[in-house]
Length: 402
Length: 215
Image (cartoon, rainbow over all chains, first blue to last red):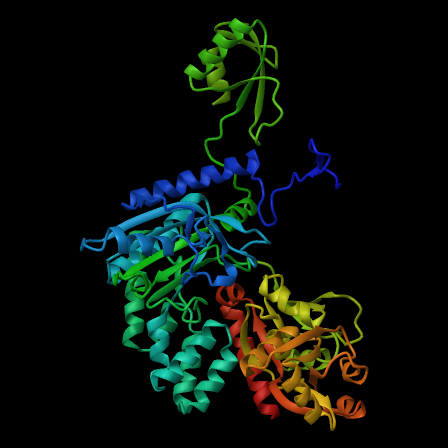
């Protein structure tokens, strides 16, 4: 029996740790995650994105986002295979095909919800983590692309992340850099670029007969970062990307005007992106905190041929990045802990304190969840004795702890 | 932002990695393959030295921004990094090898038994190769001296990384098939490549020119 385990009634050990890859989120962390959730949900709502709650369990087929090896799946009682949802976008695609196949306008949906992946998971060896995201279904064009990009930037900024850089690539522009190649060769080159193998991609393009000039131009395109270098490519698709970024900067000013930077080397591993792609990055953090783009082909896999764009924020990574900058939830109230006296008087006092907006617990407490604690004694229904000896009315205490 | 951090493989690639960086204008003054410190400040960059297979991990997780490592390591680990430049040194190749003169008998074993035993330090590369070939094999993972395995009956074939083939020959093994060639690569953490493009792109360019000029 390892440390922390206890014997059950049958003498066998009760395992106290959760199953592999899952963990308990204790109050300090949970409170901070709730604060992030609240902020993100408010920003999503301000852009007209409505909340959505798909089920935890989906059909056990691999999704475009997660292959079979990454699904946590099991058999239902009737023998069908079901899986804990590996992502929300696939669920949105499924439910749009089922419930919104008729309407022609745009659907704006958002979520803050756990997803489940078999290892290797996104952070450490966790098999469950929260994703927050938004999906814009049925809208196309620069303004739609810019909206999704701006919403992600504004969400992160409102959550408290101020120095993130959002790198914006474009699958179409990248394709046009390799326009000399036939479709089959270009598809292979693109796959190698998605895998991060620039060396392999250029070797293949050269073998497939791409001109030296073309190769040099593609190399320059991949190294291009920033508006000036993007414009220097003089590609029609590149000016479309320029326009999207300019519009996004209009939608969301941000602390710095240049929060979105064109960067054609940005290409996600997932093959379903068709237009803009973007990631929120911070210097010295090796992973993207949030990512998104346009995936017009994804919904047709579910029988609803509708264009779509969206993004997902990896909440644990966002939390970690915020924590590294010294962030703590805003509007944190102190926790007033009442040393109980006469039970009825104590109860009336607690009620009076809560009536004026004070967070009050009747002590003693074992966990403060990271909140600052103010200990008070009961004087009477309307008065407390503060730890420093002052006797205060409930209103005075409310001002002290505000 | 912290200083640019470059991870270099200890061992065979270290000397040429340092030469390449120095030729590309990185100050590596006083750094020799004999250096004992693992993290060294050199001019504007920090240089980290680690085992080859760890380089991919360091760069994948962003503990180092850049790395120089063999393509063989990238193939085996499957690390999510950007391969920016083929540096063209450290050439070697993954091969399938069998005891000289025993290829016919091992294929006969295969016909009767339906499977071959393959010893290797590179189970991922080996598994992928034989799966692509449609040959059912049992991969036996060893930590070293793979060439010994067929001689003592541990395996029929081996998958190994060879530079000259001298060790294979000395152990009476012959190459049956070449899986893939490998050379040293400049790799980058994707996020670092995007956010530090102004430093990394010129360095990659100079390293590419250096590699091209040597061949």
